[in-house]
Figure 1 (cartoon, rainbow, N blue to C red):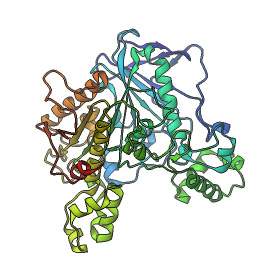
Figure 2: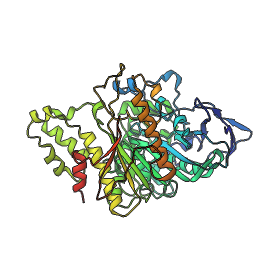
Figure 3: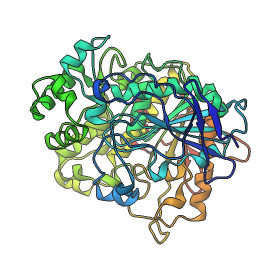
Figure 4: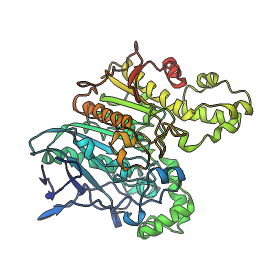
Length: 496
């Protein structure tokens, strides 16, 4: 077991994980703390240190508010008394099964979800030891969120070398990938065999990296978990729109200048963020992003990397289906999740009245995720690029008694399976769930190793092609399916 690693910046001491043969290095600095004058600036390389840095504990989560949505508070319980939040958050965590630095194992870098406003990599479902046990190195990353990570402002744009601002959270992730490229060999990793993957907003960030010139060459493969590619839950706004938000936030903080805003204690910035209700997201800054990632993907201008993408059968279940109360609400949901194909999708649903909307059992969020995933696969395949592997997670998660839950295969529910952390959940998972989790981890790690999820004794997973637009159904009996019965797939097949 490898418990020491000598990086470009200094030596690290790791600790054994809970899984035999896997060591972990927690709280590894990949950039300087973005505090003081470095608040709202691109990350800078970390300072070297002398001696041995002990990496036996997770560092702070990024500045954020506590999760409040009752469903997810119960699903992913977090003891906030044991979690600190701070601007000083640019750290990553590494799980490695390597026995020596010369092992050259493939690397998987995970970007957590949470809408780029909440979440952190050391949530209970994100433990990387089980994935690492399948002979990959697993890395997860803390990055700046919301106002701390994505605030744009005219004065920030003026002071930057590239004439723009915002997108600091994305720049943090790029800095982490650069750190991995420079240092992962010390942990037994191969810097030329890096896979990035993320879930929900993390998948949206993966799409951004698949289109950004700053990320090109830092990874070979990408996995999108409930993000879809085209119908991303994260849409880029314009720089000017985000700068207007920045000015509004400055006013909400009663500050007369950027300097005054920078001088505010982090707790006050957080308090004003909560009070103002302002949420910042990534923007088209002509530096990290030149257009919305979805547009770049639709035009086939994204990086030619191996792609795996999928979604859950009941994506919207955890959020409720409030859009079903009226025709206009239903139409708005369709317009949101089927960009460019709104009329085609609307005709499939055939909602004529508020009563039709109320009686509907459609999950437009789930359909839209399938549409976006299939659209991405179709474009990728059409441009003669590397194979795309599409999946559809349709395993109904059990309730506490082990019976199928009402919410089924809900958004984020597959994270327990992807990370092999079912034992950390309150749900009554069955033997079939543990088998599926092991299968899914094998598929994901094989993809990281070979660009192909298939392996010995695994159900065959065929790539998506124009002639055979198929998906792997991940459930008790995993199998390939054309998905033609699904609204999202039908509209994707008609997309040009």
